[in-house]
Length: 226
Image (cartoon, rainbow, N blue to C red; front, side, top):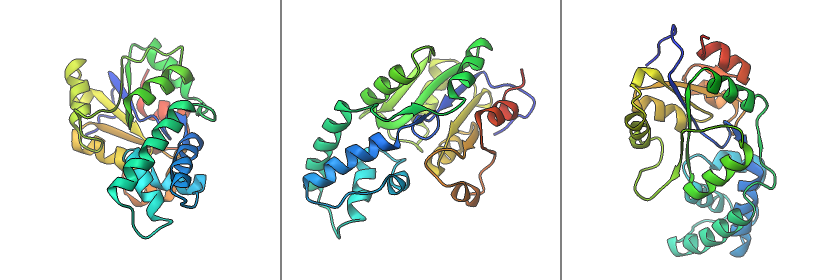
């Protein structure tokens, strides 16, 4: 659902691959988990393919790329290592993408409500956002929680709109993957994808979803009419 003539009243951002480059930290934690079961490490490039639907699914996919089968009990053990490693090193390599902070400041100045919605564990999302964006007043930061299904289920987007009195047509959802595209479609809100994240641009183009932006400046010109 798109309205080319108006600036959104609120913007929800995916975190990993959209606002922040976190893939090295994620891959580091995944590899620690794999090595605990004597499974070969993955590369950062491979890590980009595996993420998007929560860390457990990312770890499962990483393990299956190196071994024939992974039991749920083995996955449980590996997740303990992954979570422990990531909690100890959530931001050793992470950084905001070029233009992210400037874009968020433009939104704040314009009175646009900004929030973060991620499929990563909620406590990690909060820590990473606070560390990387200390000067930004996010009105809503939500990660994976047992009470809510993960993206692309629209439940958490709908919750955000209800809590902040935002209509579907006044919300923009920005992400970097097919999961985020489906999230905006399922929630019936405006959606935009960015090409600097964890998916190759061709993968995004093959999804037939639009618009796709290459820089935060393009995103500003395409979505903010200030």
